[in-house]
Image (tube, rainbow, N blue to C red; front, side):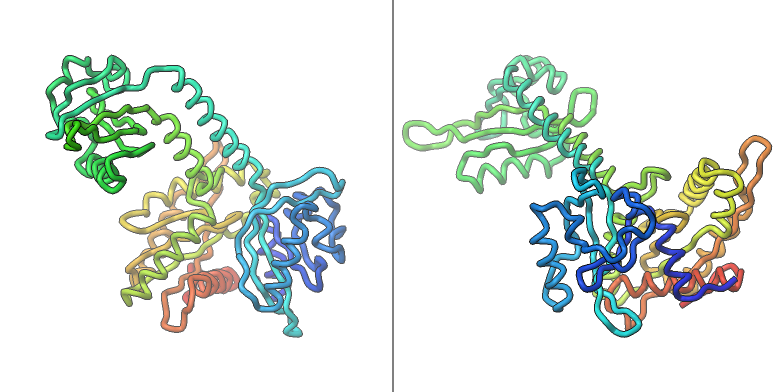
Length: 417
């Protein structure tokens, strides 16, 4: 099996879950199916249309300005949020853009971008804001835990709400060290240092305390140093508010933004962040870095013959099976469609090849079993290792991608570039 450059382009973009487009001379010259679906247009409808016509009027000037800056080679953000207009001219799509400059066969500059619908994420952000407001409203009508310590850190006063916060009755806490209720010495130092740095008064400093049952509780504390008539510090007084629910919501939102919804693996954004970090570290330390890029042979046939639900089950099966190969600083995630990558810090060519053999053999021995149905799995694997010529992580990813397609073309286990 072989692919022309154009066919490879079509194949890659058609498999993308995100929208993809190319703009040249202010007009769309290429869009993939995902982008057309996002804007609610028929296939081919957008070709030749001005891209700014599909940007919300409030953001058109900004979008055009950034496009022109890129074409002119001026600094411009590669990532930003924008509101796109659907075909009806009324409905909008909240989108996250990742944009870069490319050149066509005639060396004419164009702008290519991937588009992700972040309406759900923004809704969750709004939900988080509303939840925070509700949380504060509820807590403002409740008594926070009030406490006082002497300058040696002994608790001299604590309100009854301490029991609901930490599980201790006030009489149990009197005379004990405040430091003993922090999750770690570092958490206590964070509050103490904030009081010192802010000249004896802090507001909304967050720290982790330990409940009586050993579980953690996040608090936001306001505190100040009380002084006597001569200006000598005599005690520290403050109040603590439980913000654990708020913190859990923030963690869920952060996880959602970095997790593939189907497989539960790190998504493209998380993978590229990690690859950038590992690339920078490897360059700085002059250490090794390996990348394994693979996709599933004949995945389209599985979807066409068995249906997309079975195809999704196949991807989940691969994710669950290969998670077992993640150890140490390795990262495994879904890049898009049926494409996955392993990031292998401190692994050179030989170790990366050994790892690829393990992955290939493991998945081959574990076909997808669904009732009486058995679907064997074969992977096309591309490997790349950090080279002195690499100037950024994208060159490493590009070589692994090309190696994977060589392996697919030659129908062999893996290829190295």
